[in-house]
Amino acid sequence: MCASPNSSRAGAWRCVRRKRLPKRRKRSPHEPIRRCAACRRAAPKHDLLRFARCPQSRRVVFDPYQRLLGRGAYLCPNAECFRLAIKRKSLERALKTKVDASLLDAALAYLSQGMR
Image (cartoon, rainbow, N blue to C red; front, side, top):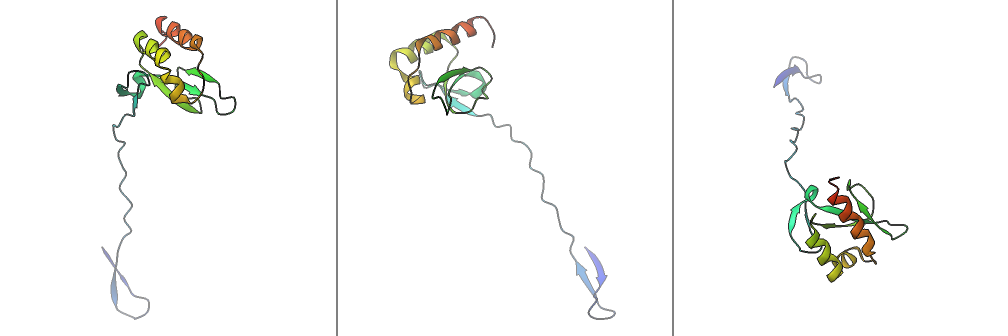
């Protein structure tokens, strides 16, 4: 704290508080958790594959970089979850639109090439 003369009364001193800046918050090491639409297993977001429904066209596309706009749904990167998603139509239910089976086949082929 500092003392400074009061301007209203000559010779009187008053305490002046310094304004304290708010403490910087550290970034938390939190990682988003998402759930697979087929097997319902919860996993970190970067471990799952994202499928997005485009808002204008309502078309479903594979989103390998997880950056596209629109409603998204996630699947585990294994063939069993892809088969379950086709059989149970869980991806269609999560995205609230029809999903072409060839899209899932193309995503599985992308995955098997080791692109991820």
